[in-house]
Image (cartoon, rainbow, N blue to C red; front, side, top):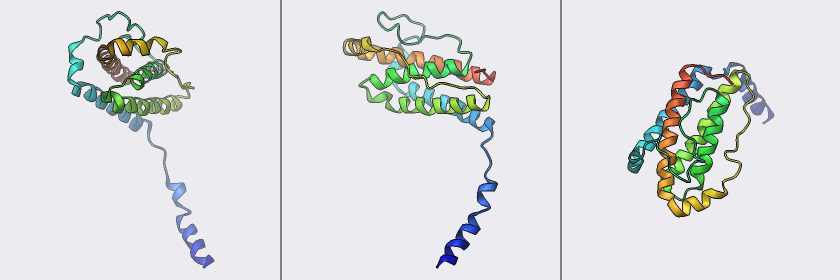
Length: 167
């Protein structure tokens, strides 16, 4: 009876020595694919096409606007803010997008690790006390503006990933 277990273990023994790390190019490609998937999900929500990502909306200044995102750290921080905003929304439209943002942040951490960067786990906004009131007063507008700006930020990130951003 012990010989069967020992033989099974010995048969599997070489396997750990043949496992190879995932090439970083594959991780970068997966990151780009996930960004494109999130942008497609945002496009599929029809009402997000009605607002420009550059438009200023009073009371929604906490939602990051378009700006050149040059580093992996800044990308992660921006995604953390959007993730926190989306998880606070009552809309079912944004649940999968929020989950995708978490996965995207994980991929950014892998990319940062490959560059020997320490990427802290950004938690989003320090305080979102005003978000509850804004969502009650104008949840629909907040969702439209947040998704529109997120889409623009993701497209910037996609472009930046081609330039091999720093830490």
